[in-house]
Amino acid sequence: MEIKINTAKNENGTLITLSGKINTLTAQELSKELDAVLSEATDLTIDMKDVDYISSAGLRLFVTAQKKTKMQNGSLTIKNMQDDVLDVFNMTGLTGVFHIIKD
Amino acid sequence: MPFGWDTAVEKSNDKIISKTFPAELSELDSVLQFVSSAAESGGADDQQLDCLMIIAEELFVNVASYAYTDGGSSAISCILTDNPRCIHLLFSDSGVPYDPTKRTDADAAASVNTLTPGGLGIMMVRKMSDGMEYRYQDGMNQVYILKGLDK
Image: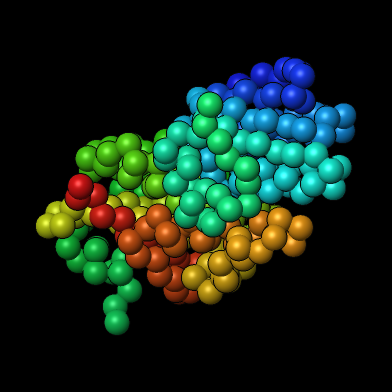
Protein backbone atom coordinates (compact mmCIF):
# COMPACT_ATOMS: atom_id res chain seq x y z
CA MET A 1 0.00 0.00 0.00
CA GLU A 2 1.19 3.49 -0.77
CA ILE A 3 0.25 7.04 -0.02
CA LYS A 4 1.19 10.19 -1.89
CA ILE A 5 1.37 13.44 0.06
CA ASN A 6 1.38 16.88 -1.53
CA THR A 7 1.68 19.93 0.70
CA ALA A 8 1.04 23.50 -0.45
CA LYS A 9 0.60 26.80 1.33
CA ASN A 10 -2.14 29.19 0.29
CA GLU A 11 -3.92 32.28 1.64
CA ASN A 12 -6.14 30.08 3.83
CA GLY A 13 -3.33 28.14 5.48
CA THR A 14 -1.82 24.84 4.42
CA LEU A 15 -3.43 22.29 2.12
CA ILE A 16 -2.32 18.66 2.24
CA THR A 17 -3.61 16.58 -0.66
CA LEU A 18 -3.50 12.84 -0.10
CA SER A 19 -3.87 9.98 -2.49
CA GLY A 20 -3.77 6.25 -1.78
CA LYS A 21 -4.43 4.29 1.39
CA ILE A 22 -3.87 5.29 5.01
CA ASN A 23 -2.94 2.19 6.99
CA THR A 24 -0.55 1.41 9.83
CA LEU A 25 2.48 1.59 7.54
CA THR A 26 1.62 4.60 5.39
CA ALA A 27 0.39 6.49 8.49
CA GLN A 28 3.99 6.69 9.67
CA GLU A 29 4.95 8.77 6.65
CA LEU A 30 1.86 10.94 6.97
CA SER A 31 2.52 11.45 10.68
CA LYS A 32 5.93 12.95 9.92
CA GLU A 33 4.44 15.32 7.37
CA LEU A 34 1.67 16.42 9.75
CA ASP A 35 4.20 17.04 12.51
CA ALA A 36 6.31 19.16 10.18
CA VAL A 37 3.33 21.15 8.87
CA LEU A 38 1.80 21.72 12.30
CA SER A 39 5.09 22.98 13.70
CA GLU A 40 4.54 26.06 11.49
CA ALA A 41 0.91 26.20 10.36
CA THR A 42 -2.21 26.61 12.46
CA ASP A 43 -4.91 26.31 9.78
CA LEU A 44 -4.78 23.02 7.93
CA THR A 45 -6.98 21.50 5.25
CA ILE A 46 -6.61 17.86 4.20
CA ASP A 47 -8.05 16.87 0.82
CA MET A 48 -9.02 13.18 0.88
CA LYS A 49 -10.54 12.92 -2.61
CA ASP A 50 -8.14 10.20 -3.71
CA VAL A 51 -7.97 8.27 -0.43
CA ASP A 52 -9.94 5.03 -0.64
CA TYR A 53 -8.94 3.29 2.61
CA ILE A 54 -8.36 4.36 6.20
CA SER A 55 -7.74 2.23 9.27
CA SER A 56 -7.61 3.27 12.91
CA ALA A 57 -3.99 4.32 12.45
CA GLY A 58 -5.19 7.06 10.11
CA LEU A 59 -8.01 8.10 12.42
CA ARG A 60 -5.52 8.42 15.28
CA LEU A 61 -3.43 10.80 13.17
CA PHE A 62 -6.39 13.03 12.50
CA VAL A 63 -7.40 13.06 16.17
CA THR A 64 -3.85 14.07 17.10
CA ALA A 65 -3.76 16.75 14.37
CA GLN A 66 -7.10 18.08 15.56
CA LYS A 67 -5.81 18.40 19.13
CA LYS A 68 -2.69 20.21 17.95
CA THR A 69 -4.55 22.72 15.82
CA LYS A 70 -6.99 23.41 18.68
CA MET A 71 -4.09 24.02 21.04
CA GLN A 72 -2.66 26.48 18.52
CA ASN A 73 -6.04 28.20 18.12
CA GLY A 74 -6.09 27.00 14.54
CA SER A 75 -8.41 24.77 12.55
CA LEU A 76 -8.41 21.43 10.80
CA THR A 77 -10.71 20.83 7.85
CA ILE A 78 -11.08 17.49 6.10
CA LYS A 79 -12.62 17.67 2.65
CA ASN A 80 -13.83 15.52 -0.21
CA MET A 81 -13.91 12.19 1.58
CA GLN A 82 -15.05 9.21 -0.47
CA ASP A 83 -18.19 7.52 0.82
CA ASP A 84 -16.42 4.41 2.11
CA VAL A 85 -13.92 6.50 4.04
CA LEU A 86 -16.67 8.75 5.39
CA ASP A 87 -18.46 5.58 6.53
CA VAL A 88 -15.46 4.77 8.73
CA PHE A 89 -15.63 8.21 10.34
CA ASN A 90 -19.38 7.79 10.85
CA MET A 91 -18.98 4.31 12.30
CA THR A 92 -16.51 5.49 14.91
CA GLY A 93 -18.51 8.59 15.81
CA LEU A 94 -15.76 10.90 14.61
CA THR A 95 -17.76 12.87 12.06
CA GLY A 96 -18.97 15.12 14.87
CA VAL A 97 -15.43 15.78 16.01
CA PHE A 98 -14.04 17.08 12.72
CA HIS A 99 -14.96 19.88 10.36
CA ILE A 100 -15.79 17.86 7.25
CA ILE A 101 -16.75 19.50 3.96
CA LYS A 102 -17.11 18.83 0.26
CA ASP A 103 -15.80 21.28 -2.35
CA MET B 1 -22.56 -22.47 22.50
CA PRO B 2 -19.93 -23.86 20.10
CA PHE B 3 -17.08 -21.65 18.99
CA GLY B 4 -17.99 -20.22 15.55
CA TRP B 5 -14.80 -21.39 13.90
CA ASP B 6 -15.38 -25.00 14.95
CA THR B 7 -18.84 -24.90 13.38
CA ALA B 8 -17.40 -23.47 10.16
CA VAL B 9 -14.75 -26.21 10.07
CA GLU B 10 -17.48 -28.86 10.28
CA LYS B 11 -19.16 -27.34 7.23
CA SER B 12 -15.99 -26.74 5.28
CA ASN B 13 -15.18 -30.20 3.89
CA ASP B 14 -11.58 -29.43 4.90
CA LYS B 15 -11.34 -26.51 2.48
CA ILE B 16 -9.30 -24.41 4.84
CA ILE B 17 -6.52 -22.15 3.66
CA SER B 18 -3.99 -21.00 6.21
CA LYS B 19 -0.81 -19.02 6.30
CA THR B 20 1.56 -18.09 9.10
CA PHE B 21 3.26 -14.72 9.20
CA PRO B 22 6.02 -13.32 11.39
CA ALA B 23 4.28 -11.02 13.87
CA GLU B 24 5.97 -7.90 12.52
CA LEU B 25 4.41 -4.74 11.13
CA SER B 26 6.50 -5.11 7.97
CA GLU B 27 4.38 -8.19 7.16
CA LEU B 28 1.15 -6.19 7.01
CA ASP B 29 1.02 -5.97 3.23
CA SER B 30 1.48 -9.75 2.95
CA VAL B 31 -1.32 -10.31 5.47
CA LEU B 32 -3.66 -8.01 3.56
CA GLN B 33 -2.78 -9.70 0.28
CA PHE B 34 -3.60 -13.13 1.76
CA VAL B 35 -6.96 -12.04 3.16
CA SER B 36 -7.79 -10.05 0.02
CA SER B 37 -7.11 -13.04 -2.18
CA ALA B 38 -9.32 -15.29 -0.04
CA ALA B 39 -12.13 -12.74 0.04
CA GLU B 40 -12.00 -12.18 -3.71
CA SER B 41 -12.23 -15.91 -4.33
CA GLY B 42 -15.37 -15.85 -2.19
CA GLY B 43 -16.87 -13.12 -4.36
CA ALA B 44 -16.55 -10.23 -1.90
CA ASP B 45 -17.51 -6.85 -3.38
CA ASP B 46 -15.35 -3.75 -2.96
CA GLN B 47 -17.05 -2.60 0.23
CA GLN B 48 -16.85 -6.05 1.82
CA LEU B 49 -13.23 -6.27 0.76
CA ASP B 50 -12.40 -2.94 2.43
CA CYS B 51 -14.09 -4.10 5.63
CA LEU B 52 -12.12 -7.35 5.61
CA MET B 53 -8.87 -5.46 4.99
CA ILE B 54 -9.54 -3.19 7.95
CA ILE B 55 -10.49 -6.16 10.17
CA ALA B 56 -7.32 -8.04 9.20
CA GLU B 57 -5.15 -4.96 9.68
CA GLU B 58 -6.50 -4.10 13.10
CA LEU B 59 -6.20 -7.65 14.45
CA PHE B 60 -2.77 -8.34 12.94
CA VAL B 61 -1.32 -5.00 14.04
CA ASN B 62 -2.51 -5.67 17.60
CA VAL B 63 -0.63 -8.97 17.61
CA ALA B 64 2.48 -7.52 15.94
CA SER B 65 2.53 -4.60 18.37
CA TYR B 66 1.62 -6.17 21.70
CA ALA B 67 1.49 -9.99 21.71
CA TYR B 68 5.19 -10.77 21.96
CA THR B 69 8.24 -9.34 23.62
CA ASP B 70 10.77 -11.43 21.68
CA GLY B 71 9.02 -11.98 18.39
CA GLY B 72 6.55 -14.62 17.35
CA SER B 73 4.07 -15.44 14.66
CA SER B 74 0.45 -14.92 13.69
CA ALA B 75 -1.52 -17.54 11.77
CA ILE B 76 -4.57 -16.70 9.70
CA SER B 77 -6.98 -19.36 8.49
CA CYS B 78 -9.89 -18.88 6.15
CA ILE B 79 -13.01 -20.85 5.23
CA LEU B 80 -15.64 -19.91 2.65
CA THR B 81 -19.15 -21.32 3.11
CA ASP B 82 -22.39 -21.10 1.13
CA ASN B 83 -26.06 -20.62 2.03
CA PRO B 84 -25.53 -17.94 3.16
CA ARG B 85 -22.24 -17.02 1.54
CA CYS B 86 -19.76 -16.19 4.29
CA ILE B 87 -16.08 -15.86 4.95
CA HIS B 88 -14.78 -17.18 8.26
CA LEU B 89 -11.39 -16.02 9.51
CA LEU B 90 -9.38 -17.30 12.45
CA PHE B 91 -6.47 -15.26 13.78
CA SER B 92 -4.21 -17.29 16.08
CA ASP B 93 -1.12 -16.36 18.06
CA SER B 94 0.76 -17.71 21.06
CA GLY B 95 1.44 -14.32 22.61
CA VAL B 96 0.18 -12.98 25.90
CA PRO B 97 -3.49 -13.84 26.44
CA TYR B 98 -5.63 -10.96 25.19
CA ASP B 99 -9.35 -10.96 24.56
CA PRO B 100 -10.21 -8.11 22.15
CA THR B 101 -13.93 -8.77 22.57
CA LYS B 102 -13.59 -7.47 26.12
CA ARG B 103 -12.12 -4.19 24.93
CA THR B 104 -14.36 -1.21 25.57
CA ASP B 105 -15.17 0.91 22.54
CA ALA B 106 -13.44 4.28 22.34
CA ASP B 107 -15.51 7.18 23.58
CA ALA B 108 -15.59 9.04 20.30
CA ALA B 109 -18.44 11.19 21.51
CA ALA B 110 -16.09 12.85 23.97
CA SER B 111 -14.72 16.25 23.10
CA VAL B 112 -11.56 16.27 21.04
CA ASN B 113 -9.60 17.56 24.03
CA THR B 114 -10.27 14.39 25.96
CA LEU B 115 -10.69 11.92 23.12
CA THR B 116 -8.23 9.06 23.25
CA PRO B 117 -7.76 6.85 20.21
CA GLY B 118 -7.50 3.56 22.14
CA GLY B 119 -10.19 1.07 21.21
CA LEU B 120 -10.93 2.57 17.81
CA GLY B 121 -9.47 -0.41 15.97
CA ILE B 122 -11.45 -3.03 17.88
CA MET B 123 -14.59 -0.94 17.54
CA MET B 124 -14.07 -1.00 13.77
CA VAL B 125 -13.57 -4.78 13.78
CA ARG B 126 -16.74 -5.24 15.81
CA LYS B 127 -18.82 -3.00 13.56
CA MET B 128 -17.44 -4.24 10.24
CA SER B 129 -17.85 -7.94 11.03
CA ASP B 130 -21.01 -9.97 11.47
CA GLY B 131 -19.57 -11.91 14.38
CA MET B 132 -16.50 -11.84 16.57
CA GLU B 133 -15.55 -14.45 19.16
CA TYR B 134 -12.48 -15.16 21.25
CA ARG B 135 -11.10 -18.14 23.07
CA TYR B 136 -7.78 -19.05 24.64
CA GLN B 137 -6.99 -22.66 23.91
CA ASP B 138 -3.81 -24.73 24.10
CA GLY B 139 -1.74 -21.64 24.76
CA MET B 140 -3.18 -19.78 21.76
CA ASN B 141 -5.25 -16.65 21.41
CA GLN B 142 -7.90 -17.40 18.80
CA VAL B 143 -10.06 -14.64 17.36
CA TYR B 144 -12.84 -15.78 15.07
CA ILE B 145 -14.41 -13.37 12.57
CA LEU B 146 -17.56 -13.99 10.53
CA LYS B 147 -18.38 -11.78 7.55
CA GLY B 148 -21.39 -12.34 5.32
CA LEU B 149 -20.75 -11.94 1.60
CA ASP B 150 -24.30 -11.94 0.24
CA LYS B 151 -25.28 -8.58 -1.25
